[in-house]
Length: 221
Image 1 (tube, rainbow, N blue to C red):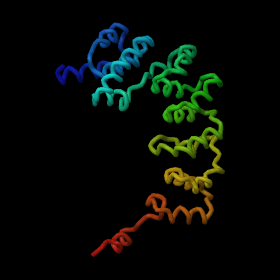
Image 2 (cartoon, rainbow, N blue to C red):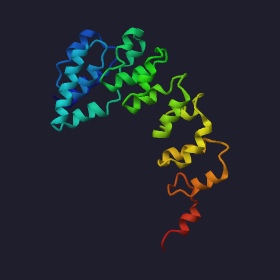
Image 3 (cartoon, rainbow, N blue to C red):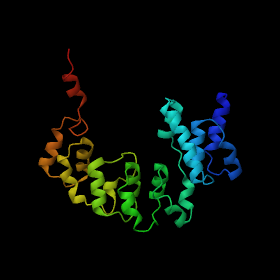
Image 4 (cartoon, rainbow, N blue to C red):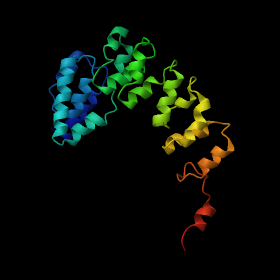
């Protein structure tokens, strides 16, 4: 397959508005990125989805870089699932493919019985998505942030969630992960001893900022 043709197929496969007929035409294309994208289509049944993923997983097992990228680094998501009827969405609660469960976790109208499953999903990306719903319990938020910290580029932060128990922020200073300890600084009334403890940390982003003069004085001559 020519490079230009492969790029065209991949671009078409990533179009969420394809008709069932157009998706059917993509199913026979021997390209891992196309197969994974087609597997996320609303027009693909579970059996076909499993077959497409099995083909790509077999290629990855044989050392295919393209298959590894398709399975691990694809940013495409089945966004159509957010607009599907609730009964249909709930059938994906136990879907074996993480991306479907992650999208499901962004739907805030799920029944209460769905949230414990999503809050305890084996994949962190699913648990993070579920934690952003308005009614997330405080203990779920604390457990998630204490164990895994924050994703700094996703706002608002989970520590800014209305239900996050901000009185526990100062207890983060003793956590083993520096990324979690850093979040203690989100406490505007963090006691001085805790600030001093953070300032003495080995990690530069926890300690005091280094000025140009201090950097220069420490540079060997």
